[in-house]
Image (tube, rainbow, N blue to C red; front, side, top):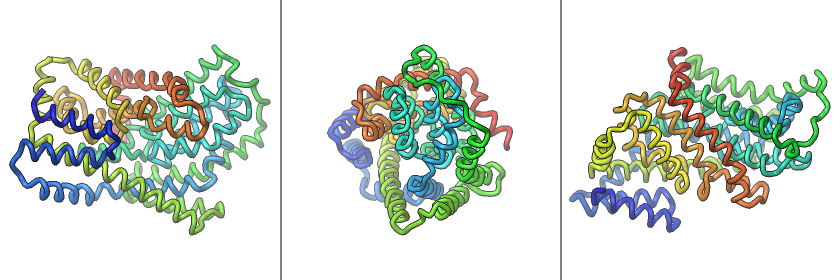
Length: 430
């Protein structure tokens, strides 16, 4: 390990472990490492880098999609999702537990935030499932795992960040995430069904079958969100709108939905705007700090040194991906997903491209691995969200989430074995 890398690693452990904000931690470590090892005006370099990062045109997409999710968070969308999905899953093994998976998948298509998806769906489903006699652990575990699906289903905030950093088309990333996201939802539902068959006590007896009239009302409940998804994603995939324009369409659609439900008030708008500002400020600070640290590492030739060291191991492409999977799993225990992406990408992206992997494919692989970080202790954010919703101990939630984390590892194996799962749709639509 080179001296600059040793210093940076030590300082990151010290600052992040000491509870310093991630963005400030990354920024200060980058500045200090340049002061120690390079003779340059760090203040001017830092100011120029922050300005360039914060004024990137592609980042305009982020606040728009976040605002859309915040607006929908304050509508009755989650209640409509539960009412719309429940009649169609009552006869499946696992019954209403599948609402967690399908609800998060649907809401993930109108919100790029895993936390917002988990909170919005969980506010309704956890109370309903508990009242109907479902096991609290499997309900919490399925919600924790399913809440991460929003990272793959467009619009996804981590995919936008990856596209900006890796200079990959955000639209292609959105399209590429659809099939893996649906496969992951299918894996989760399959596990819930198998678990219920093995341990039938975790779910109450099956409800009476629903009538066609009830199913018709359920479809009407889902119609508003289905139309919003159609307008946002349809305008993207049909080429009528850019990613930023589609995000603006999503905000307009969210406002129309809120107005139709009689919830478009000044108080609601203020809450949505303030939530957007807080989220964007957090993401912007992390991005600014991580990008500055990555450029500082580049000035110190750390990515080149690490790449040379890994190349000397003569790993096969599959072994390299296995090593990176373990690497990101370990990082996920201590860092959130966005920080992991922006910190590691300058080192890992050149490695995987040199090994022959498509950067589009690597983007989806990376998102799946940071999904695991959302439900791995001690930093897994979804675990804290669900603890706040249910009051369950963090360890119990983490244990219940473990099967879903294993299924994400299985998805990584599928993506390695069949990379066409990622590249097929973007190539077909081009």
